[in-house]
Image 1: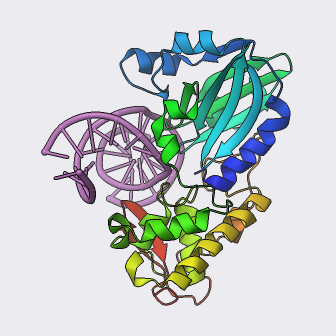
Image 2 (image 1 turned 45 degrees about the vertical axis):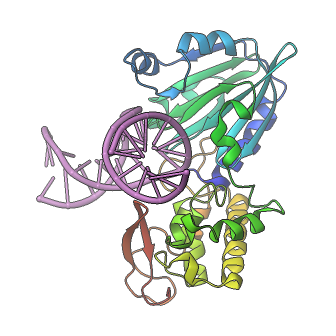
Length: 289
DNA sequence: AAATCAGTCCGGTGGC
DNA sequence: TGCCACCGGACTGAT
């Protein structure tokens, strides 16, 4: 499940192989063609596959950046600039190869949905569950939800933004875990890193935002940022379907102290699990209050 | 008016 | 071993 650190790893790996390249040819899987023709909206959002192919062919990739859990491909065709916004969803992955057979794991090879051919090789988007998204825009403002995302967590404004959102009536009565996982409050923090940060802080995921002091909220925010940074250094967490673009797993999963645990790594108490905001939330009933 | 809820995109996985 | 419920980012649209 790619969160901010995993997406950051993908972007850093894509940059040297993608920037400056021109997309000569585009392939879209039969599966996506069929899904779209059945009136569904798999992966290619708000665009017909043939239209997407025609528009993407001849695009030059001028930059690749990350915003929250989204990958931004900055494109241009002549003087006209475009933005291809890509979300990995649950199981999206990019591979940079010369031949599809270089993608060694069958489950990724079986679910290839978009291929960008350049003169230097292939940029391949695989997505097992098809929760991923691609939107071809002229600018961020073409898809308004992008404008509502919280600042990057490493941005100077992010802590202030977090604290002021916590004071809003719509958030202050909510469980803290639901709030730190909300992309309008903090960018890029999903279930894994929310679980880890709350464990490190000794805060139960169900604790209401208004019951946590300003100091503790500041500390929690800093803890989230630290864990996100640590995970970026470790190459992200490979929980199920995350791979970097060379098909390799990350290393952060070995450092997770609560996510996916049955026993607390601090005190040995069996962990508990409950649903918060519809999401499975694991915590230690002894260490987290 | 705003908050909440169901629906949407799916297949791997685990329980029986 | 075959079936089936479950899970999940983040949006949209209805209530």
